[in-house]
Length: 93
Image (cartoon, rainbow, N blue to C red):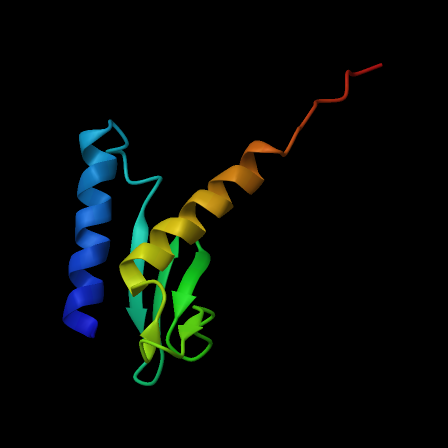
């Protein structure tokens, strides 16, 4: 699976660059600690092989989403959650 995940991360980062996010501040990452594989974005884990949260389809005997589909779904959920954050600066007295 590693080769597929490395390609996925490369493809997603290429899409970021093509959309103008080419300063390295926004990036998908792949990490393997020798036991568990991780795919993340800016330090947030989108998927890992040890705690795979994808739904299983008993009839088809496979996951309902591929890892690629799941990573993109989790990225959009992460982005949506970030868009709800409101920050303000306190004015100096």
